[in-house]
Image 1 (cartoon, rainbow, N blue to C red):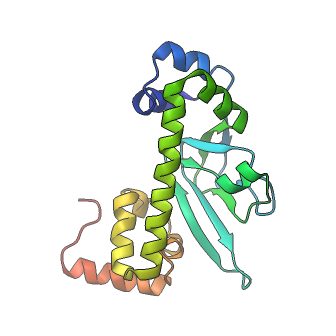
Image 2 (cartoon, rainbow, N blue to C red):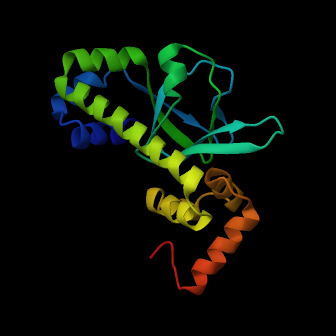
Length: 198
């Protein structure tokens, strides 16, 4: 099942239906149950995972055993460890299914082949990389300089439906704050009639 990925390529990469069928003929999808790991820290990341359905998270664990969520990956998102995949290094991150999740497995050989044959795909991939860097820079800036409230509001902007899909401790972990701090932020926003899903 890679229909969402085909639709994504048609909308974002400017490929024709025939090109997409040829390009994706060898791609495979895989379904993971809630709690399954797609990547463990210490392994080399072999794939970029395109989320057809479900939700992933990538996270790291510090020396005290505390988890720090780096990214969520809902439908139509890519989740991977780019540096591990590109440099063939052990990953610092783990990737886990938060819900039952179906992903398309995209490896470096597919990216290279598609980029060589289809210029539109190459441009799309370059833009995706630049967008990933932009989002990382923004996330670093928010973690270093933004208030907890601003981080939470940006989280809602980026992931508009995830407050209904993940527990509060995961959101707090992503924001770099305690669950208690997140609860205070939500209460203050509620006083001002803020509704995250309106």
